[in-house]
Amino acid sequence: MLISTTPTIEGYPIKQYLGIVTGETIIGANAIKDIKAAFTDFFGGRSSAYERTIQEAKQTALNEMSQQAAQMGANAIVGVDLDYETIGSSNSMLMVACSGTAVIV
Image 1: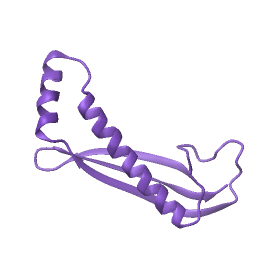
Image 2: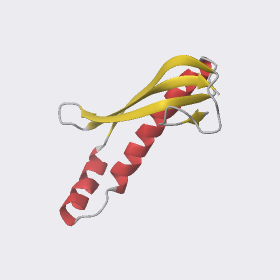
Image 3: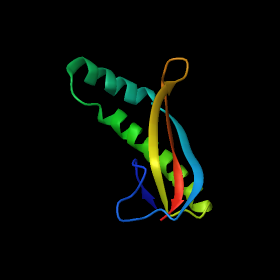
């Protein structure tokens, strides 16, 4: 499945637009990650634990969107947009949502 944030894919003319597809995931950061992140925040540097969590959530949302597009008969998704939000009473959950247009190229 070709996935692009642009409205077209160079070298692949769009033959048919099939519709909007989406993918969403909500993932929690556990207490261990929070403790590690607190040390990183205090001492400086990057939080690899949180980075891995964000990457996992993004990939899950993209996979969900790709599966939806494949079920529609698409072989590509164009105009993809990714959104990140924290949710929950203490903002301890991360929501990643993506959307795009399923197409046949």
